[in-house]
Length: 118
Image (cartoon, rainbow, N blue to C red; front, side):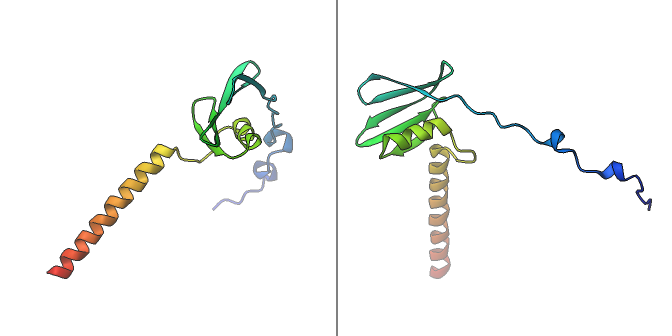
C-alpha cells in the first residue's frame, strides 16, 4: 500500500474553480389581451399564462406544464415566475400511480378473501 506524500494531489479545489455566480432572471412582463387572461413574457419570449376559471387562477408554464390553481393572482404570478418545481411529477403520472395502487389493493383483498374462504 503506497503512502501519498504529495499534499497538492489531494487538495480541495479553489473557490474560484467550484463556485458559480448565480444568474438573475429578467423580470416578467405581463399583458392582458382579454379579461380573465394574463400572458407572461421574459426578454420577449413566452413565459407562461394565467387564466381565471371557476373561481381559481390557473397557472401554466412556458412549455404548457400545469403549475397549479391559486386563489390569489399574485400567487399565480409567482408560480409562473418560478416555473415548474424540480422533482414534481406531472398530474398524469400521479393519476396513473393512484390507479395502479387501487388495482394492487383490490387484488390483495381478493387474494385475502380467497385464502379465508379456502
